[in-house]
Image (cartoon, rainbow over all chains, first blue to last red; front, side):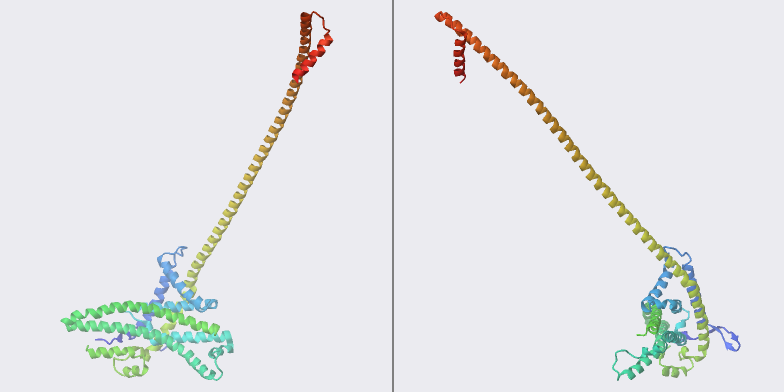
Length: 247
Length: 195
């Protein structure tokens, strides 16, 4: 019997070496590529009619677009337009990798802390650079809360700086932990069902219960997959807004 | 798989904490695969490659297409709305124009009717007055004529009475009364009778 966390193991599908670097094509890489190919194919195919009155599939594509566009508009404002393609890409990437991961025997790319942290760190550094380029030295006023008593300012600055640098950690751990917990839970219940069935007799009948739990959990995980893509994207928008407009 | 094993594996949920993870990583198969540092460079490489491709596809191909369609639609809708507004305004202008024309025609018609009535009234009054004048003239002539005739008749009556009185006097007393004398008496009698 496998461990419930064995599903997260990286397996090499095709081994490659380039100039001494390991560039093996793994299960993780396969699902990253699938997410890119499927999302692009879906969106391009859906928008092919470019109809004035959209059909069902075109409506799906437009709704995804409008969903992220509204998020950027309401959280970042008109200055966010330049970053819209990036934020849309982030949303699509997280959404598709999360959703693909729910297909049995597939792999959840976002269940790897290194992946989520790399994305969060890229966003964190990018957003900080945007703030520095826009406001210059004035950007550091972001860490000084306005209207606070002068005596408290040193402490508040420390707290603000810590909370600022915790951002990439919380952003990445939130997504990673949600995926890890959800998939582990599914596997635990699945393992329980198998164990009860193999025990035979009365236990075989009881094994229906974990199976029912898996059905409910799968629905929940679909919700979580969408929700976490949304949360990751909206936090990106908020961080960007802070960098552009300080506060 | 024993219940104890399941409980142990469920605790993997809590393995976000690095200290537990390191401890678990020490075992042969129980550790979180996420914390296997050897797989990180490979994952980072493929993330960089795939996400860069995705970003290029989204920014160059997908979002411009969706944006073009949505903007075309918004333009068409606002254009159609403007057209509808214009048509509505035209219709309203036409209605006011029509109402104005109707009111003008009504006023014109009532003016004309009033004028015609006044003219007819004046004409009727004039012809009535003329007729009255004519009739009055006729009445006057007839009255004068009648008066003349009556005077004549009265004069004749006096003559006849005088002659009759002369004859009566002659017959009664055998005396001849002069015409002038008798006539004086007759006239006095006539006057007394008339009085």
